[in-house]
Amino acid sequence: MNPIAFLSDIMLQVLNVFYAATGNYGWAIILLTVVVNLALYPLTFQSVVQMAAMQRLQPKMKKIQEELKDKPDKLQKELADLYKTEKVNPLGGCLPLLLKIPFFIALFLALQSNNFKQIIVGAGGAGSFLWMHNLAVPDPSYVLVTLIGLTTYLSQKTMPGQGEAPGMGGMMMFMPFFIAFVSIPFPSGVQLYWVVTNLVAVGQQLYIARIMKK
Image 1 (tube, rainbow, N blue to C red):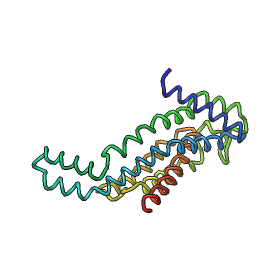
Image 2 (image 1 turned 45 degrees about the vertical axis):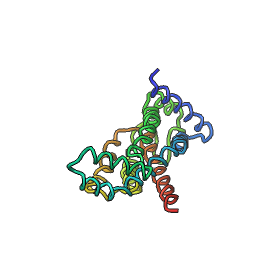
Image 3 (image 1 turned 180 degrees about the vertical axis):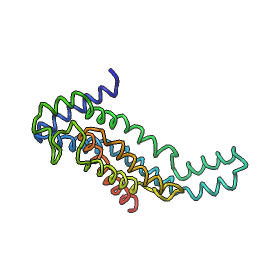
Image 4 (image 1 turned 90 degrees about the vertical axis):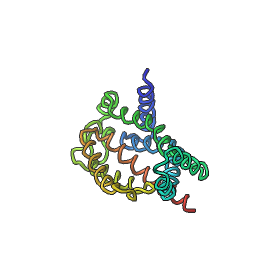
């Protein structure tokens, strides 16, 4: 079996466990999303710390690059020595995020699967949540789509160093609109998952930033 498909089936089984505990699939999605994000917190912590470290080194890196721009071999050696001295892994901010991706894809696919749609149809009122009458279809009010855009922006803002690099300000404004637009056709269960994931990310990043300042 495809590993992602296998992981997706596990996500659905865990979702049903949370449904049995709450009696509602909306709350079950929220709990599952929070639990998955908390379980992956060590990877998030390493990613944020390494990105902050790389941001801190930018002035030194820029100085080395300017001084040795005509000596590529020496430039690479000096940068490698800098990373070693400062105990920074230039890939440390990306690798933990890459390790998290299969879990989020699996949960994403689980909430878009036909199995999930059949579950929601069979759940009756338990397949609705707040103003959403059916978590297997898109939110007709676009409230969740709007929240996806807002929480994506907040998530970007709380990442270390975001908005400081040239051109990043424009990207930070564009991406929330783009992601919100892309999310329009997704089932409201997926949209709810997306909003909660962003909110958890904001909370984790603010918490990690507070730890780093101490």
